[in-house]
Amino acid sequence: MADFLTGAFQLPRTAPFVQPALMQWKYDDPRPDWNGSRSYAWMEGGRIAAHACLCPVTYRAENREITGSYLIDWAALRLSPGAGVFLLRKLSSLFQVLWAIGGSQDTQTILPKLGYQAAGELSLFARVMRPWRQSRNDPARRGWKAPLRLARNTLLSRLPAASIPAHWTCTPLPAFDSGHIPLLQAVTPHPTTQRTPELMNYFLRCPGAKMSAYVIREKGVPRGWFVISRVAGVSRIADFRLHSAAPDAWQAGYGLALKMALGDREGCELIAAATTPLAAQAIRRNGFRLRSTQPVFLLDPGKLLLPHLPLEVNLIESDAAYLYDPQYPYLT
Image (cartoon, rainbow, N blue to C red):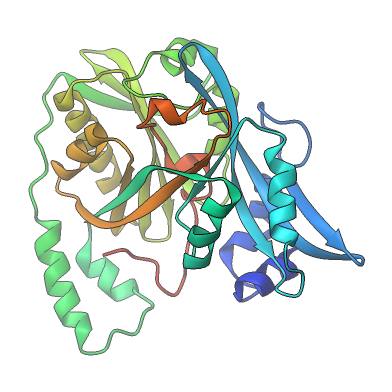
């Protein structure tokens, strides 16, 4: 499978996304919302013609559970036209909705033809944390641009972050347990994916990144959580959930995430993602700058989620929390 995927994506066999421990975790490690393997292959003539891996999610909208999935490691041989589409249609029958975010220009062109509809945008923001370390460890050959980039990123790293009120704090959480169920099930401003302690602990076991979870507290009372993932010098706010619709609360929550990320001296930049105005505003107020936007597509033939936009999307729900390009790792 690793040979097929690296060949399809034209990447070296050493690419991080096909390392054995990560493939085992993505495809076969037990998770509470799926039985059996999540890796599916379309075979033609005894060889793999297409492949996709499921990343199941369950949304709740109007007191109704809606099952869905992202497809990661989705690839097909050019010599087998239609194989990728056949596999997608087969997998779509297992869920009520399917998600897709970004992708190549070819992918974004073909998805609407397969019934996917636009469901908003995922905005990627970044903040430089350690410009000197980032510059020294950057594998990209930037030539004369390197000192200019360092100067720019040094200035960006000094952008002020929002002050965090004293009654907002966070505490590290090595693992989730049954005592966190009320926190995981609390109501949020926008529709979000359902979480259980077992699912959260599955995410924290990801071998492709260092995962660190924190509980957000207001006056000592748990109000939400966030998870920071780090691969080499790239840190991400992989998961963020806050049970409040107050902009100041979200601003404080993202401020706490930035503070914790800065405490990891290996991190050079911090990435945050937003699909709602509430999240985007809070991220901007903490000194992050918009780096890119990616279209969000939804295959939702029953119109179960489309009427409830915007939906909260987190990087941890797909492979976006740990994907890593060793040649060009940074957004800034």
